[in-house]
Image (tube, rainbow, N blue to C red; front, side):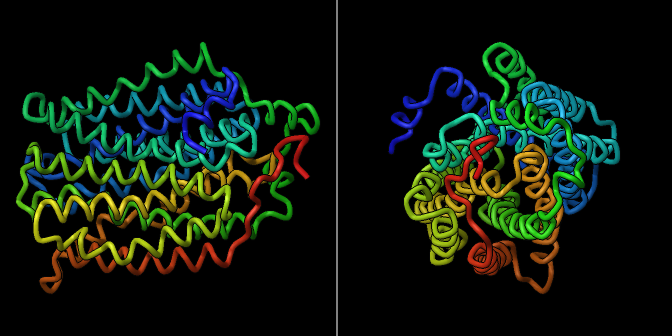
Length: 410
């Protein structure tokens, strides 16, 4: 099933819901990755080591479970739509405030607060979409929704390439406040989740303990799974621009650096949609395992390609596999989650995984400085090890492809 044919099968309101959630995750990722592009510039302005600046990445990732829990519980009690609008406004405001940081300390505090707001968006947006569309569309739409992340990465790279030499790193964060306009679209076009409304009508508001009774082992498993997933994606993305600058000697605003990031994100877009759709045919677990394992033979091209062409092909293919595995995640987590906590559990598991993997960029930077290993070797070994771990965790876990939501849940 193609993307266009799948979207044509959705009604008018369902298409708006998919688009709004896709844009929300795209713009959230756009704001997040903006910081990763300017690590060197921030370090130079404040006169600190790059590793200290990467603490901003760590703090953002570490704060996301807080936001996932707070906003997720609000979404389970008061609805997906209003809480999603509040969340988008908040992460846009904290992004804007980052532009006016007077010191590295203030900047790091603001990145933590941004992480709290960022943590709420994915879980709420994913549950709103998955509860609003037919089960047969979940795989492909899951891949499309998750592809918002590389689209945000690409958008950030494009803005960085076009504007950083003209407005500096502070100006980039001012541009990053524009996602707040998405709230106007959500307010006018996106309805509330019918599954949430049905569950509220049948059961009313329930406490977290009551809703999670019998599901705590599942929650712990999902957190471990998402830790591996986040080490997979952040290990291949967060230090890539630094790798371009330091190891490939490509200036931050150069065309070659932008092209490599563009190819990386194009691969992510292709992989997410393809493996998400394929999971409808071969199953969620099988699709994720295949994508993870196929990343391993691509690693030499990705970090040790002898030319820009080879590096570009490697960047494209590694993200086909990394984000191919990720493309199945939104539907997989939502299908495994109980109705009463679907606003909370998928997003909280995702962001707790982020917390457990939050030190990825800092760890890679530190390891690369030890014993002359260098960033290319560290990134390569990291992805190979995590790919094997991820495949094992997926293989050991459950699957609930096509399960009904709300009253339709069996």
